[in-house]
Structures are given as structure tokens and as C-alpha cells.
Length: 301
Image (cartoon, rainbow, N blue to C red; front, top):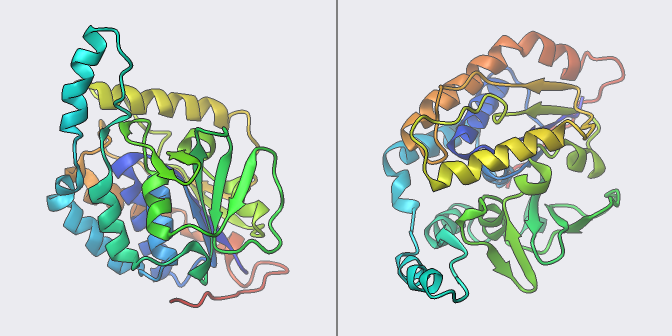
């Protein structure tokens, strides 16, 4: 049977999604479609672009030691912000991190391809601060269901979309594309099951890496911003009927910070173990033997 994955946001905790994909591929349960927001969007976009789960594991292992090199603080903006605040002028700092290095890294991985170039049905949401809409970036526009306060788009570069969906407010600058001012897709759709269903995938396996998040003992402005966002997202999820057939909640390491790259492998292992634990149920729901099922394998780029 055809089935899709919906992956939540959660900073480096999103490495757990790679563990989920590893366990699924080992069991021959290859998803036919994928959606993700924020960190889940990065994993979804790279997987749809043709990276196998094992290749994604290699990327995670590289980021454990080198992830901090992708962080580019806006030192000039920070220096200007202090006198602007002290003198009552408009503060023009829009994020502590510029996000340029992350985008360059993602463009290198995806080769400048467009969302419409993906062969796998893919949906990655971003929140547009200009209109207040969800911009649902997708590989296929044909047959998508129109939703309230959602605009569908297939005309953006994959790396721009991945940079935008991971732009945690106040931590990263928004991504400006034309008249769009895009931030973290988790602001409106932290677990984009409904968007994947609207794009044409009725059978969804969801993975939520945000529910087990705990505030670290040593807090900073990044953690305050992201924890506040996590609380808001959890409340919003209680009001939304997602429609997934099964949800996985990996048991992640305690007190994992937003950019705690050293814990990425442990998060990946947690996703792998949770998926292996739930594999009998996953196969019962999504395998070809499921009543009325039909298996369709994706083609990779």
C-alpha cells in the first residue's frame, strides 16, 4: 500500500527522523510520499531529493562534529541593535543567525533543484509573515486540495524552502523571497499530516519529536524562543484533527537543546529504536497485505 511520512520540527531532535527512515528501509517499508516542517522539513527535502537513509545518517554524523560551522551570527546587527534600543530607535535585527551558511550547505546538497523537480510527492510548509498564510511548498500541484489559509507553491528552490522552513523566529533571520517573508513551518504546521493528506496521500505515518521536549536547566534566549514555540505548537495540535493512521514519539535524550549537535546521533538512535519497536503495527497498517492496499514505489532522482 502507498503510504507517506509526516515529520515534525524540533531542532537537532529532528535527527530522530533519520533513524525512523533507517528502520523503515531495513524492513522494506519505503514511503512513497513525505512531508516535514522545520528540521523535519530538512530531512523530508533531502530524502525526496534522492538521499537514502544511510546517506542521511552520514550527514548526521558529519554534523555532530561540524554542525556549528553552519552557524553565522549577525554580529554587526547585534552591535547595531544595542544603541538602537538604548536610544529608542527602531531595532532592525531580525534574527541572531543570518542563515546564509546553512542555505549554502543545503544548496550544495540539493544542487539548486526546484521543488517541482522532485519525483516523490513532497510537502514542506513555511509560514509567511507578510500574509499570515502557510506556504505549502510541494513537488506536485495537480490534484491538491485547497485549504483555508494555505497557498500551494512548486516554484521555489529546494534549498531555499529548507532554509525557510527551519528559520526559527528570533533565532534565524526570515527568508525573503519576492514578496514572501518566510519563517519556520512549525509556526503554523509543526506536524504537517493534514497537508500531506490534502496533497493526495491518505495513509500517513507521523513522527513527532517535539512532545518529549523539556526546558534545559541552563536557559538562553534561543531556548526561550524555541520552547515558547514548542508550547504554542503543542496547544495548537490539540485543536487540529490530523488524520494519521499511526504516530511515533521517539524517546529522546533529556534536555536536548535546539542546536546541541553532539546529541544528534543519540536522537537518531532513538528514532530507530522507536520505529523498530512499532514495526509490527507499521507493517499491519501499511504493508501490501493490508486489505485493499496497493504498493507503489517511488523513483529517485
